[in-house]
Length: 228
Image 1 (tube, rainbow, N blue to C red):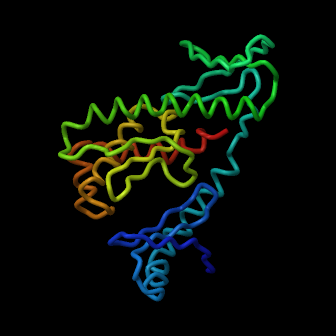
Image 2: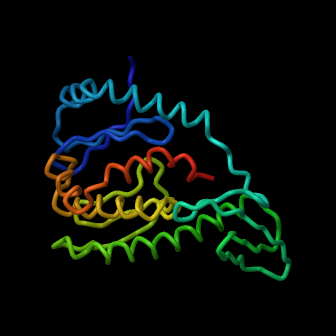
């Protein structure tokens, strides 16, 4: 098989491979790692690459494109909410509210791209609020705390932790069930001590969250539903 990938060299101690939502591959490695060693690593992961790319193809076939019109379904903390769009020319500033049974957006004009961008902004605010609260809940298990918490657009991962303990969350995290959100939070906080996915790292995750594999599987199965 022929494998194309994006190679990112940085100040890190180990090599890792990430599969993006579209099946693209990102390989991250130490600055001075030899190209031959990078190739050998990718070859050792060939079976995993094939399996993951096939899974993505199957998910893409089942993907339902969200049209962002009245009645469209949006997720928030694992629950589906119908979208209600209200057009009011007096509302120059978009307003978004979530009730018990729907998400309501009020805009001055029906513009699908504007609605999409405004919803993303709203989700980002909700996400930072939720993950900040969950980090505070789990902080008792960790000696270190995050230097910074940010929410951004990330296509290939739910979150990431930098070498100096800044956590970057995908805004779509807040669409996930709260148990899955907690897994993402604990996963990234465990990177404070382990900057890799070693056995010690996963033991650390399991000590805090014994059922983490179930929560991780939920994300794998439902991740395709969290896009628009």
